[in-house]
Image 1: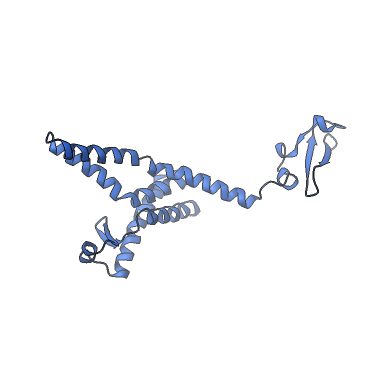
Image 2: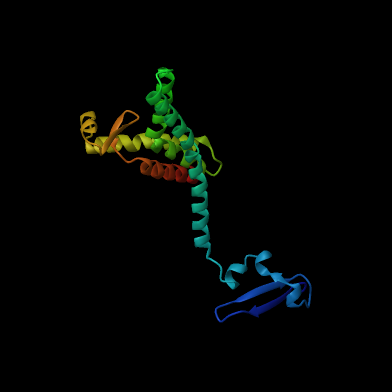
Length: 193
């Protein structure tokens, strides 16, 4: 419109900065980059494309969502360490040391489910617990499906380290990786539908 002057200052062969000013007949010293006023900056200033910005935004949100299950790990380590120290070095309060040790073990042995639920809740648009419930159900279905297809029994689990029992289901040992996959799928499904 007539109240905006456009000044283009070429900086290189590849592109130029595009300045927009709010005053008519303004000089380049009075102008500010167009990116502050409009979205034109990405075309003129050679910044990243929208696709790479979306990918960077996803990984930023993914990193923030990973903080949810990671936040419980220090507590699990403290419980496990204190319980182990009290069992090893004292005969005083053996019941307390066994409880602390078992609390630490239960958290560390079920990291896959914690990552599935935590990641899905962290990636849900409104951080709703429904996404966590979907991840929990998906994690159980995933492990039961692997157990059924591969024909894994408790005898196989006790004799082979490649298998484990997760929530009472004899299954392939996948660890945190399965939790990450299920958490991503549950969060995607929750946000999509």
